Image (cartoon, rainbow over all chains, first blue to last red; front, side, top):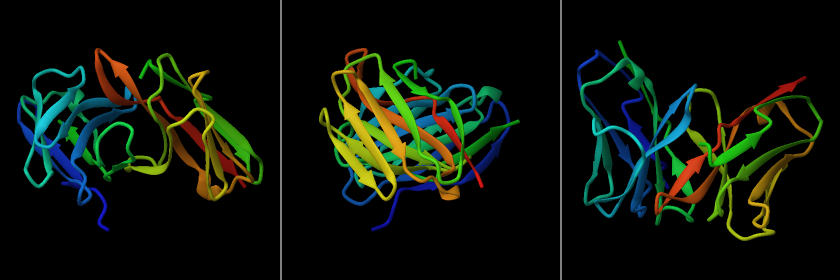
Length: 113
Length: 113
């Protein structure tokens, strides 16, 4: 059974640009959650998608957005990039969301210069 | 997150020694997860606990959930170099009216030969 796949693994962008990250969950999983991980803040919840609908949202500005497709694959978009957006972005895949086992991808390392 | 506190923040132990990492919640727990992370990589799922008093083991790692105390402990027996990494606890918590999977700050474990 394939695991959670995130692409790309590494990304370098310039301030002001936008970026799109992709996450393919485990087959059959309908929930995809996104997290930002930085040394100072740890793992911070961005949002969760379930059956193409955003179900939960963290405390991030509107520059951070996402969507989920009918095959459960999810994308996360960050517009008008800032230096502080440099982080490891992780997605987690689970059957139903909280209270079901959640598996993470390898992450996308975003560097904003 | 502030809702989950892990202790200690870092731990250095001699190979072969036992160790315990604690995770305490300020809110009622709805499922408690333990993950291991190598620096800059994704999170590896270790186990999930759902019921008070539940205890699970995976190889030499045992985790227990004390629901009344809103606390979980992760115990490693006869530690090995392969156990080194960052251990993160995550929990389903009700935050701002929605159930979200949030994480502690992590415990960095170093195993000295």
